[in-house]
Image (tube, rainbow, N blue to C red; front, side, top):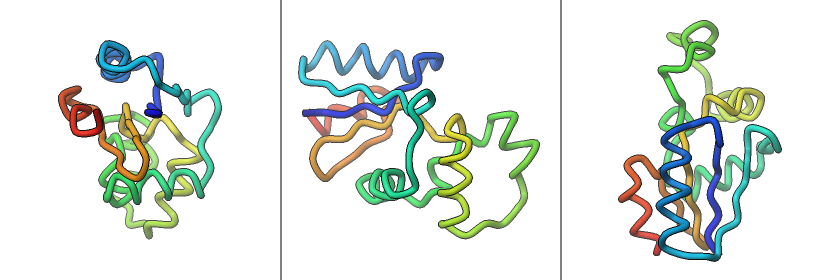
Length: 113
């Protein structure tokens, strides 16, 4: 089973989902914008990505620029910020077993298939 953390409003996320659907029928779609994401879940995702929280922040988002740009936060603080503001999380994130990739560009997903 492959899981995709998906935001239906995001073009890149829709492209990633479409690409994944063309490759495999066994997909679990997590709309983390609507459903939310817990601190524990996000930390698990980051571990599978082998990325720090700040590596997965969408720095072009207006919310980031207004509230967080130029400020120093610990990794735990970033995780809390990301769970409270899920639009700040880069997407799509695709997970299979113990490995995850950021699906931008969509070709990144191939390493999981």
